[in-house]
Structures are given as structure tokens and as C-alpha cells.
Length: 292
Image (cartoon, rainbow, N blue to C red; front, side, top):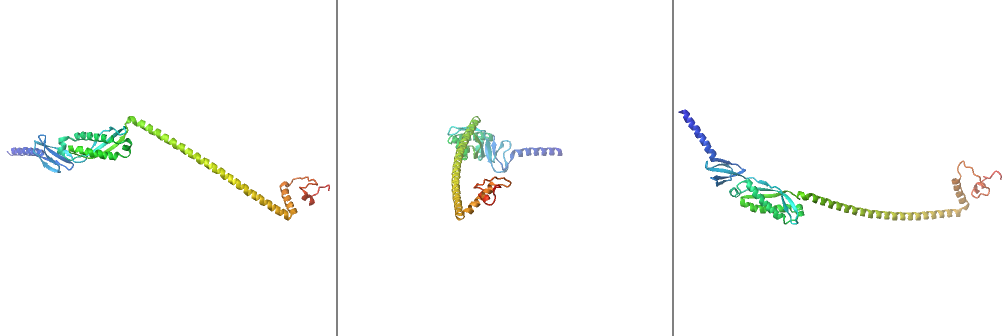
């Protein structure tokens, strides 16, 4: 009898556990839930904690409360100046109305597909109004902000809030990328050649100016040197003339001695004619020839 009661209790506990597992569910802080009864939503649970539902006839589906991301594949777009541009973007979004989300797209995969279509459409519309160089240089952030705003308006129909849309990459298509790089390289080479030619022209101008200035400076220096040399020679002549006028004989004597110092060297043998005017002072001072 006791064994039978124990068996009944065990069976009741098992049935109770099964019923409890079917009737109780937990919603944590990262999730929100919808209770479905025979496939139709009957209640929304967005508060974290322990909740109840009817066992067996009701079930629970969970949706993320956190911010999600959709990393769409790169797409090719056409700018206003008819340039092709490949943009790789990522969309961050959040489920705000789980009931509307469930009715509209059912799952996160369905939401990503619908959201990517919306962002592709808005990007195509925005990029078609802006030139290629502006997209690359300065308008990218403004474009993505406008895309995020317009995409948020349309995504609200699915219970989704679009947080932002950002580009990871914006490049030319691979088939035209190399030709563009070659053209850019040729343009840079042309500019560098022009700059080198301009630099060489300026260098020649500066070099010619320096040569002209050097020639002028040398000519002026030579002219000044000749002037000073002439003034010095004139002064020397004046001094010689003054000295000659004071004592012509002494002046002639000193000048002749200076000439002797230049002409006569130690050990030289000199034959002096008797009537030599140059050696007159030597002869007059007793350096006569042996015959006289």
C-alpha cells in the first residue's frame, strides 16, 4: 500500500513538473516575449522576470531587446555624374514593437531582408543626387544620416527602430578601379613634370640673375681696384717726385742701390764697362777696373 502511495506521489510530482514547465517561463533583461495561443498572439511580455501561461495550448516566442545589426552585401550604385560606386553598409536596429514585428516580418531574418531592401532603396535615391567626388570627400556622413532617417520612417511599419546606417567601404567597381588608378597616376606624373619644369625655369632665372650680379660686382670691384691702384701709383709718384726735388742725388743713389740688390747676387762675377752709367756709383766709390 505504501509503495502504491509513493508511486502515485511520484507520478503526481512528475505531472506537476510537466505542467509547471508548460505554465511558467522566464523573460530576461535582454529579451521580450509574445504569448501565442494556437498560433495567434494573445499577450506581450516586456518586463523581465517569471511569467505564466496556459500549459499546452499556449507557447512563447522571444525577441531581442538589444540593438541588432544587419551587415548587407556590397551593392553598386550610380552617382549624379554617372559614376559607378560600390557601397558596403551596415544597419543597426532594434525591435520596439514585438507584436507588430511578429505580424509584419515574423523573424529576425525576415526583418533583415526587409530592412536591407529599404536601405538599398534609400541609398540608391540619395547617391543619385550627389557627385562621386563629394560622396568620397565630404558628403558621406550627411548622406548616411538622411538614409537612416528615411529608413527609420519606413521600418516603423514593421515595429523596428533604425538606430543608424554606416558605410564600411565606398569604392569604385573592381573592373574600373585599375583604370582610374592609372589615370590618377598619369595625372600626378603630369603635374610632377610640370612642377619640375617650373622649378628648373626658376632655377635658370635665379642662376642667370646670380651670374649677372656676380659679373657686375666683379666689374665694379675691378674698376674700384684700378681706381685705387691709380691713386696709389699717383701718390707714390708724388712722393718720389717730392723726394727727388729735395735731394735728387740721394734719391738717385737709393734707387740705384735698390736696382743693385735686384741685379747683383752673392757670388756673381760682373764685368763692368768703364763708361757704364748703371754702375756709376760703384765705379765712383773706387771699384775701378785693374787697368785704370
